[in-house]
Image 1 (cartoon, helix red, strand yellow):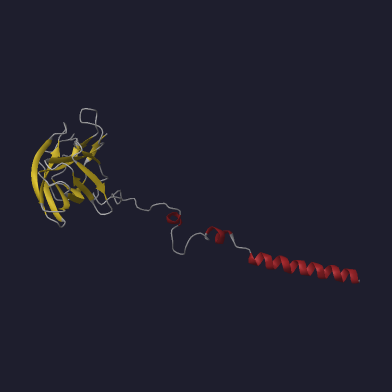
Image 2: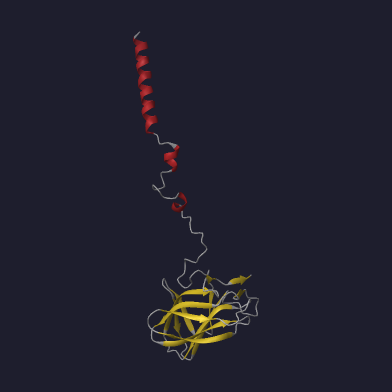
Length: 210
Protein backbone atom coordinates (compact mmCIF):
# COMPACT_ATOMS: atom_id res chain seq x y z
CA UNK A 1 0.00 0.00 0.00
CA UNK A 2 2.83 2.38 0.93
CA UNK A 3 4.59 1.56 -2.33
CA UNK A 4 1.42 2.40 -4.26
CA UNK A 5 1.07 5.74 -2.47
CA UNK A 6 4.72 6.60 -3.19
CA UNK A 7 4.29 5.73 -6.86
CA UNK A 8 1.17 7.88 -7.15
CA UNK A 9 2.94 10.80 -5.45
CA UNK A 10 5.92 10.51 -7.78
CA UNK A 11 3.64 10.45 -10.83
CA UNK A 12 1.81 13.53 -9.53
CA UNK A 13 5.04 15.49 -9.08
CA UNK A 14 6.24 14.49 -12.58
CA UNK A 15 2.94 15.64 -14.07
CA UNK A 16 3.22 19.03 -12.35
CA UNK A 17 6.81 19.47 -13.57
CA UNK A 18 5.85 18.73 -17.18
CA UNK A 19 2.98 21.23 -16.93
CA UNK A 20 5.26 24.02 -15.62
CA UNK A 21 7.89 23.45 -18.34
CA UNK A 22 5.23 23.43 -21.06
CA UNK A 23 3.83 26.74 -19.87
CA UNK A 24 7.27 28.41 -19.99
CA UNK A 25 8.21 27.26 -23.52
CA UNK A 26 7.83 29.98 -26.23
CA UNK A 27 5.49 29.26 -29.09
CA UNK A 28 6.64 29.04 -32.74
CA UNK A 29 5.01 32.42 -33.40
CA UNK A 30 6.94 33.98 -30.52
CA UNK A 31 10.23 32.52 -31.78
CA UNK A 32 9.66 33.85 -35.32
CA UNK A 33 8.80 37.30 -34.07
CA UNK A 34 11.62 37.60 -31.55
CA UNK A 35 13.98 39.41 -33.95
CA UNK A 36 11.43 41.97 -35.17
CA UNK A 37 10.33 45.10 -33.32
CA UNK A 38 6.65 45.74 -32.94
CA UNK A 39 5.28 47.37 -36.08
CA UNK A 40 8.53 46.87 -38.04
CA UNK A 41 8.60 45.07 -41.37
CA UNK A 42 10.63 41.86 -41.17
CA UNK A 43 12.18 42.49 -44.59
CA UNK A 44 13.51 45.89 -43.51
CA UNK A 45 15.24 44.43 -40.47
CA UNK A 46 17.18 42.03 -42.69
CA UNK A 47 18.57 44.84 -44.84
CA UNK A 48 16.11 44.64 -47.72
CA UNK A 49 15.06 47.94 -49.27
CA UNK A 50 11.42 48.85 -49.70
CA UNK A 51 12.20 51.65 -52.19
CA UNK A 52 11.10 50.52 -55.66
CA UNK A 53 10.43 53.92 -57.22
CA UNK A 54 13.47 53.72 -59.48
CA UNK A 55 14.66 57.21 -58.54
CA UNK A 56 18.33 57.82 -57.80
CA UNK A 57 18.53 58.44 -54.07
CA UNK A 58 22.24 57.57 -53.74
CA UNK A 59 23.81 60.68 -55.32
CA UNK A 60 23.06 64.39 -54.84
CA UNK A 61 24.48 65.08 -58.31
CA UNK A 62 21.31 63.86 -60.04
CA UNK A 63 17.63 64.45 -59.41
CA UNK A 64 16.00 61.22 -60.64
CA UNK A 65 18.40 60.16 -63.42
CA UNK A 66 20.24 56.92 -62.63
CA UNK A 67 23.55 58.68 -63.24
CA UNK A 68 26.44 58.70 -65.71
CA UNK A 69 30.19 58.30 -65.69
CA UNK A 70 32.37 61.42 -65.51
CA UNK A 71 35.12 62.04 -68.06
CA UNK A 72 37.75 64.74 -67.44
CA UNK A 73 39.51 66.05 -70.54
CA UNK A 74 43.34 65.93 -70.59
CA UNK A 75 43.66 66.01 -66.79
CA UNK A 76 42.50 69.62 -66.64
CA UNK A 77 40.52 69.23 -63.40
CA UNK A 78 39.81 66.83 -60.57
CA UNK A 79 36.39 65.49 -59.57
CA UNK A 80 35.36 64.83 -55.98
CA UNK A 81 31.83 63.56 -55.27
CA UNK A 82 30.81 64.61 -51.75
CA UNK A 83 27.75 63.97 -49.64
CA UNK A 84 26.23 67.23 -50.94
CA UNK A 85 27.42 67.72 -54.53
CA UNK A 86 30.12 67.14 -57.13
CA UNK A 87 33.19 69.34 -56.61
CA UNK A 88 35.28 70.16 -59.69
CA UNK A 89 38.72 71.63 -58.94
CA UNK A 90 40.40 73.49 -61.78
CA UNK A 91 43.96 72.31 -62.55
CA UNK A 92 44.50 74.15 -65.85
CA UNK A 93 43.78 77.87 -65.70
CA UNK A 94 43.68 78.21 -69.50
CA UNK A 95 40.81 75.78 -69.98
CA UNK A 96 39.19 72.70 -68.46
CA UNK A 97 36.33 70.43 -69.44
CA UNK A 98 34.39 67.30 -68.62
CA UNK A 99 31.55 65.16 -69.96
CA UNK A 100 28.85 63.12 -68.27
CA UNK A 101 28.93 60.02 -70.49
CA UNK A 102 28.19 56.32 -70.20
CA UNK A 103 31.77 55.17 -69.64
CA UNK A 104 34.70 57.55 -69.29
CA UNK A 105 37.36 55.30 -70.85
CA UNK A 106 35.36 54.45 -73.99
CA UNK A 107 35.55 57.03 -76.78
CA UNK A 108 32.85 57.90 -79.28
CA UNK A 109 34.61 55.84 -81.97
CA UNK A 110 34.99 52.77 -79.74
CA UNK A 111 31.42 51.51 -79.70
CA UNK A 112 30.33 53.65 -76.78
CA UNK A 113 26.82 53.29 -75.36
CA UNK A 114 24.98 56.46 -76.36
CA UNK A 115 22.00 58.42 -75.04
CA UNK A 116 18.69 59.31 -76.66
CA UNK A 117 18.23 62.98 -75.76
CA UNK A 118 15.37 63.76 -78.15
CA UNK A 119 12.79 63.97 -75.37
CA UNK A 120 14.83 66.53 -73.40
CA UNK A 121 14.08 70.24 -73.80
CA UNK A 122 15.98 71.80 -70.89
CA UNK A 123 18.48 70.78 -68.22
CA UNK A 124 18.52 72.50 -64.85
CA UNK A 125 21.17 72.22 -62.14
CA UNK A 126 22.28 73.94 -58.95
CA UNK A 127 25.82 75.34 -59.07
CA UNK A 128 28.24 77.67 -57.29
CA UNK A 129 31.98 78.41 -57.27
CA UNK A 130 34.59 79.21 -54.64
CA UNK A 131 34.89 82.63 -56.30
CA UNK A 132 32.70 84.22 -59.00
CA UNK A 133 33.53 82.72 -62.41
CA UNK A 134 31.95 82.05 -65.78
CA UNK A 135 31.78 78.45 -67.00
CA UNK A 136 30.17 76.96 -70.08
CA UNK A 137 27.82 74.04 -70.68
CA UNK A 138 27.11 72.21 -73.92
CA UNK A 139 25.53 69.20 -75.55
CA UNK A 140 27.73 66.24 -76.52
CA UNK A 141 26.84 64.88 -79.96
CA UNK A 142 27.39 61.38 -81.38
CA UNK A 143 31.05 62.23 -82.07
CA UNK A 144 31.60 63.62 -78.56
CA UNK A 145 31.86 67.11 -80.00
CA UNK A 146 30.57 70.15 -78.13
CA UNK A 147 27.33 71.61 -79.49
CA UNK A 148 25.21 74.59 -78.44
CA UNK A 149 27.80 76.04 -76.04
CA UNK A 150 26.35 78.51 -73.53
CA UNK A 151 28.11 80.57 -70.84
CA UNK A 152 26.88 80.36 -67.25
CA UNK A 153 27.89 82.83 -64.52
CA UNK A 154 28.39 81.40 -61.04
CA UNK A 155 28.47 83.11 -57.65
CA UNK A 156 29.61 81.75 -54.28
CA UNK A 157 26.12 80.53 -53.36
CA UNK A 158 24.08 77.78 -55.00
CA UNK A 159 21.78 79.05 -57.73
CA UNK A 160 19.58 77.08 -60.13
CA UNK A 161 20.70 77.37 -63.76
CA UNK A 162 18.68 76.44 -66.86
CA UNK A 163 20.21 75.23 -70.11
CA UNK A 164 18.06 74.86 -73.24
CA UNK A 165 19.02 72.16 -75.74
CA UNK A 166 18.97 72.61 -79.54
CA UNK A 167 18.10 69.68 -81.81
CA UNK A 168 19.21 66.98 -79.35
CA UNK A 169 20.22 63.71 -80.97
CA UNK A 170 19.05 60.16 -80.44
CA UNK A 171 22.63 58.85 -80.15
CA UNK A 172 24.52 61.49 -78.20
CA UNK A 173 27.81 60.50 -76.58
CA UNK A 174 27.02 62.31 -73.32
CA UNK A 175 24.12 63.95 -71.52
CA UNK A 176 25.99 67.17 -70.65
CA UNK A 177 29.42 68.83 -71.03
CA UNK A 178 30.76 71.35 -68.52
CA UNK A 179 33.96 73.41 -68.73
CA UNK A 180 35.59 76.77 -68.38
CA UNK A 181 38.14 79.12 -69.94
CA UNK A 182 40.52 81.24 -67.90
CA UNK A 183 39.15 80.08 -64.55
CA UNK A 184 41.83 80.60 -61.85
CA UNK A 185 43.85 77.54 -60.82
CA UNK A 186 42.32 75.90 -57.74
CA UNK A 187 38.82 77.27 -58.33
CA UNK A 188 36.21 74.81 -57.06
CA UNK A 189 32.93 74.51 -58.96
CA UNK A 190 30.16 72.70 -57.10
CA UNK A 191 27.21 71.18 -58.94
CA UNK A 192 24.21 69.15 -57.84
CA UNK A 193 20.60 68.23 -58.60
CA UNK A 194 20.98 67.88 -62.39
CA UNK A 195 17.46 67.54 -63.77
CA UNK A 196 16.11 66.81 -67.26
CA UNK A 197 12.81 68.36 -68.39
CA UNK A 198 10.65 67.72 -71.44
CA UNK A 199 8.94 70.37 -73.56
CA UNK A 200 5.99 70.54 -71.15
CA UNK A 201 8.33 71.17 -68.22
CA UNK A 202 7.87 67.72 -66.72
CA UNK A 203 10.88 65.89 -65.34
CA UNK A 204 12.10 63.00 -67.48
CA UNK A 205 15.38 61.15 -68.06
CA UNK A 206 17.50 60.25 -71.11
CA UNK A 207 17.42 56.64 -72.27
CA UNK A 208 20.49 54.56 -73.05
CA UNK A 209 21.06 52.88 -76.41
CA UNK A 210 22.49 49.61 -75.10
